[in-house]
Length: 237
Image (cartoon, rainbow, N blue to C red; front, side, top):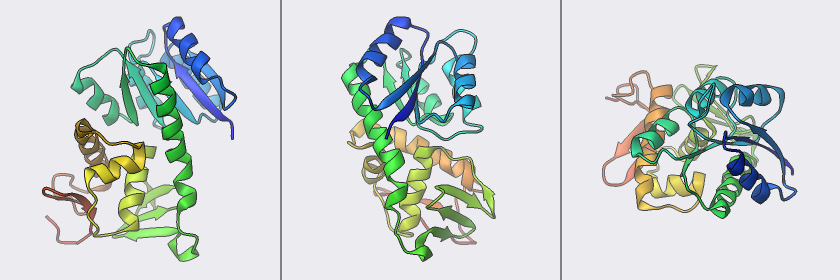
């Protein structure tokens, strides 16, 4: 399968370097030097994955991600010289799936791209083949494993691909407690201790989209010292 990869980067040298390492026959590569140009490309093509810089002219990476997330859910990996934790948290909060800090090893970027693609597009087909399992239900939430969509009371919820994968894992085994490491390894591969914060951000984002009151979640419960589970109860507080 050939993937459409979008590189959004205003540094021509970095774009050329990424293209050199990624142009291996598996990708049709699109490039943009700012967010406005990237939005047009994303609107006219079925993008599989994007590598996005933050500091760019006309429209920066954050604005691009916020805008493109209104209509798409393809994986987005941020490549940025902004190295503070707050920058990474912001990127994940607005819809990115991963954050790589500059300067980076291009081989690591290639490995991350391949890992994200493998998990993004191989997860849905692994759903149970039984027709009764095509829809996963917990409370008012319904996960369509064929279309890979989550809805609440028949209204589709705007989750990112990473958030959808977390929900798929939780909803396939209601009441089972998953550790942060188990959830992270499912969506991104190898787990490291500093990935705890990343998973907490993803869970917080999901709660903000599926819960009536994220401060008193009815669906995703934190099990202290262990991890998370999904377990709906009307009177949960």
